[in-house]
Image 1 (cartoon, rainbow, N blue to C red):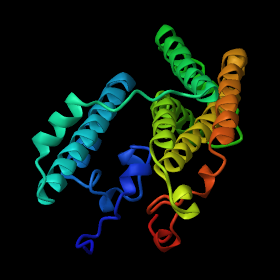
Image 2 (cartoon, one colour):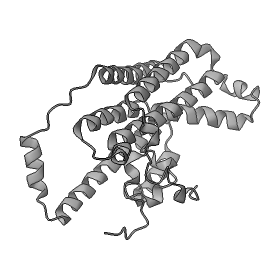
Image 3 (cartoon, rainbow, N blue to C red):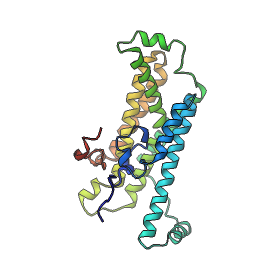
Image 4 (cartoon, rainbow, N blue to C red):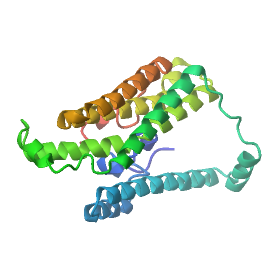
Length: 262
């Protein structure tokens, strides 16, 4: 069946769920909705960073709910009984994934990073809103406004990907053990490679964001360098576990025919 819409098939499967920043949001079955405009408006009106984070996470939750509804619709259109399938899964749940030693180590690393970071942020809610932030901006090589925007973006980035890395890594573990592929091409384009690639991208973006914050807040070097070390270790282990993740072609994002979409 040909795709009758302008949507890119499966583009949402290997994205970062950050619809507000995605260049494919109007070509995505999950992201292209009027609710996105509503979310953006609410974020503009939010008085605090905490409220903005709450609004973003609610939007992500809504996206997952829409994906579930889309799956239900597809099952019914295929002539299958959705309720029966759900009942069968509930009565006969798949066996729990048994992780290898390396996978267990990666899981622990990703969860420790997320928990450590969130605990630190909660204990220091004003850590990146110090009174001397403006004076810091004035001595930077870049324009003060650019510096302040970079700080804001870096804070949003490390928060956004905090638990995302662990979720995608664990999905990759599960997929690697559940499926058998007939060809090398199928293996390269497997869900576990796609999930691992997205996790690695999130790690890379988090590292860049922490480096921005380290440059702006050198007095926090002990803490930030610790997070950078954790992320580097996660990245190395993910690459050892999924050496072909970088070869996975993500729908839309890694296809040259969509390079014109900015």
